[in-house]
Length: 210
Image (tube, rainbow, N blue to C red):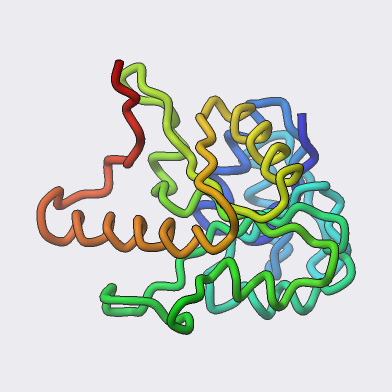
């Protein structure tokens, strides 16, 4: 099992924390609003609360904040992230849902990696799951797929083991530049919501034939 620090107190933070606790992982919640952090920890029954700005206790650190805040968070923690596996769940999508705020040819994960200290291993994961779908978990007997991308094989192995502890299936897509493709999958999902599916009660995954 893993020791996980989740930075952020929103819906994805709560969904991830709940599944992580159910999977037997140690979970620390970190947020700028101490009262909200304590409230969420109490609702989850088992999570601890870490002071904002203090070094995360977990070996795995999840950036469960909006993309616009992720770079600042990584810079703020600085060397406290050295030696940690940092999971980027963000989607750097423009407000009109038509493209990305990141430079052409880059991705949110790659930009975060640029801001991170040497020795922090960035892994993209969970960005293609809606929070309420993640909270519910496998539906109709089908395991949810979590696509991951990262440059360090050992870091991806640790994230994969964490994902499996949540009752989900990790699918490695390659090195960190593949995060751009994963962020495009999130954009595709928003297009489906707007134009065909008309709701967010779905997930995208892989069916292996034969």
